[in-house]
Image (tube, rainbow, N blue to C red):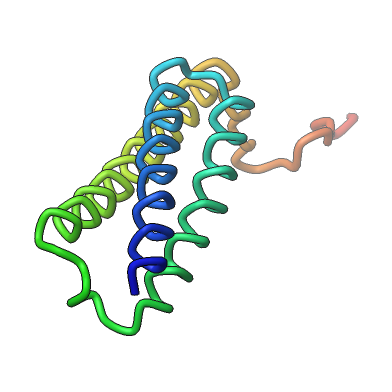
Length: 118
């Protein structure tokens, strides 16, 4: 199972590096770079999951390696929360700049009031 260990180790390093890229994208606030980083992270994370699953049992990995996997899982959760918070901030900023128009109470938008002529 050494091949599986080496494959898993190299993929874990790639996942950790890609997490760093996503962190940098979050800090920079560049949506296109963040989107590319997240897509790359998704790809390497899926590859990592497949290799890990193929390893039949996580018992073949030592404690330090499993700790790194736990740290990756925690970082993913933290990044997910950061992205959710950033999304809310952007939506609030947009709402404050482009306030929705209030609907009229008794008339539809675009209708002109009609007056009785005497």
